[in-house]
Image (tube, one colour):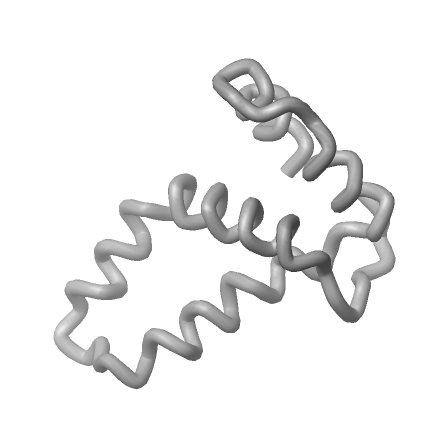
Length: 82
């Protein structure tokens, strides 16, 4: 992973990144959603915060992750990439 953040990530990578992030953080996200002070207008802020992580990957890393095979083996390999 490159240490230089990119300003924009590809839509395909962002989608994959958000899927993985929400899977990995599912328990924490449930706690946030169930908090008494969580409101519907907090959702866009939460989504935006999660999306910011995708921009930390270089365009080369994004292409490599997106190009890897999909499926159980591909997911196991991809887990190491992110």
